[in-house]
Length: 278
Image 1 (cartoon, helix red, strand yellow):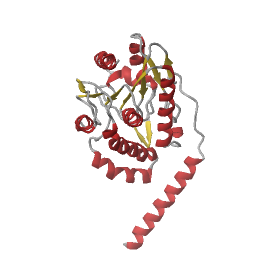
Image 2: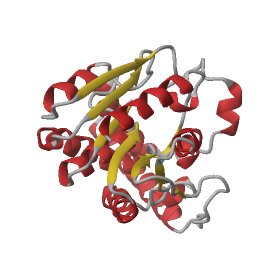
Image 3: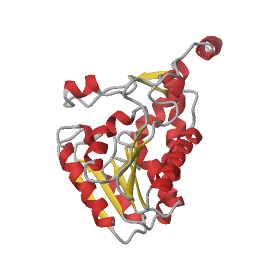
Image 4: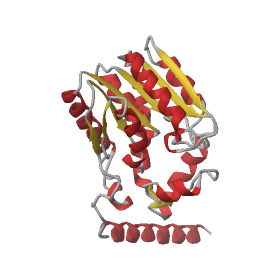
């Protein structure tokens, strides 16, 4: 029996080694997908940095960005390194690359505006929190930002097993998301599993950074978020040291609610928060 187990283990180890070698030699695209590019819209002296989520792109921020620029808010939405190209390209990046993308865009916004709001949806919100803990900003907006994940323990158990057999996991959508949004949205269809550890590291760092945040903060989340635990909202609220804290729930919406049917409601809440911070 022991011999059989050792033989199986050796075969699996050989399989994993061959798979890794094949993937390292695979040609992947670094060209940006049309519609996923970074964008800048210069308007007023108050600006907002919009940071997209893991495996997503600036496509998610185009409608919000237009809404805000129509109201004289300068907007910068950077494409984080490795995103908007190919999952294989993303697999070559780490948290350091994503943080550098966010920092560079923040410094650019700072150079053209007098007051800066940092905002992000999903994982982009964790990057926004890190920026707010390092810089004096005019305000922070988090949208479906994870502190706790639903089925987190299951993920921690399954991830090492999955990574042994494959490098990518097909992404699935929360079923009620309209088909037209699924089709039009520019995002990866699969997730590079080697990057998950860097996502977890960044989330952990953002949690530790919360007490350093003293600027006004707007914490938003969908009431039907399929992946991020509701307790994330309360945790951010309780552990930041901001004098002004606002929680807003968006009803019956996808995790990235700024692209779903109730997006106008979220746009109004964000604009009202920015206006109150001016």
